Image 1 (cartoon, rainbow, N blue to C red):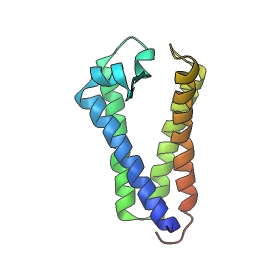
Image 2 (tube, rainbow, N blue to C red):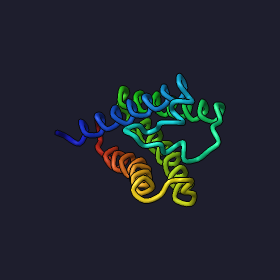
Image 3 (cartoon, one colour):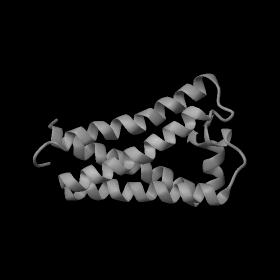
Length: 137
């Protein structure tokens, strides 16, 4: 697979993930809060109390990032892609910093898994940003 393909597929995968999370939080905010990320884990619920407004705002943020990531994949312009990825990195970095400083009710493996996933939310877009150095993708 070429660097250009990795970049494009990476943007699409990140876009679809953010769209999934955003739609879930928007359409079923209570369910999102109680069960995110799924698979028996309850990471968001570890930070009570539930707030429908906050969860809906998070859903809107994820949908916005998804739209931007998917546009970047579609238009294949280095500058657009770089700007979108920098925005995702800023959001994800701030999100990681908060959770690294505030564990909520998470402990042990659940805390480690959540922090690893949040770190990947920074590392993966940063890796894709490096690929924007390709002249045409």
